[in-house]
Length: 348
Image (cartoon, rainbow, N blue to C red; front, side):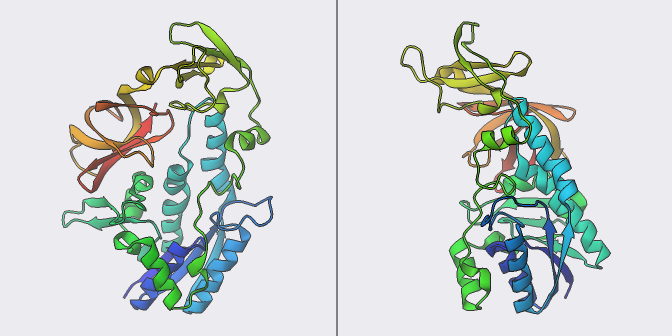
């Protein structure tokens, strides 16, 4: 049996992970990362609010395992929150949960695990990971595709991923709740988190405005440069967005691109918004030889599309088999071959 650090947010999934590993006879140590000081009361269930830290400790007490809380607010602000605000101010659509896994949760959690003498780190992500005999790491979709979170893990540091245990990869959420309820664990019926933890339920654009992003008026234009309207800030627009874009001739219009330098939003028809070519940078791979073709998800809830991949260093051009809307700069593009995550990058 191994000593395993479990990243615990106080929610159902991380609590179930700790319970499953403890039942298997492992020495479980619960670790909660304090990431954000919440301003609004009653904002529990959002990943490490004070109430959630208390819930994590209560679960560990029930299981009879140790629990520690580590302050990582400064790191979280520097690597996740500030870039989120900056990206919105530049008219990009950031991927904060991906960045959090990359810079805050899995990497630092493995560092903490080493300090505590643990051999592995575990989390409540719905995905599957294993290491081949030759040392190659294989990250796969979860059995429950509606819950699959492999998309968020493609940036995980390799040394942390090689030590990662994901007990929920083969489970469905109702079965996880039933597992918890049968054991009388306190968080069995706790609601799922559905929003960004630090935004605390607010509208994203209002939140970034309250954190320094200024309203900067600009123009709404057609692809040929004709000005057809005005706006009060590019941070209010996302590539592929239709909501709030009214066509001057009654036709639905979509955001095609945002031009930061002159605060312009370019809009067009549905046909104009569907792209065949997507450019990606900051590539990282889980395979020794990047594939020439794969299935790519251009955002978390995207069903995905087959594509050809032309790599050039840490960047690539994707040629999509079918045109797609909503390939927004800042979002992650994650590549799959079958059930396996083979790599990914960020749309530019």
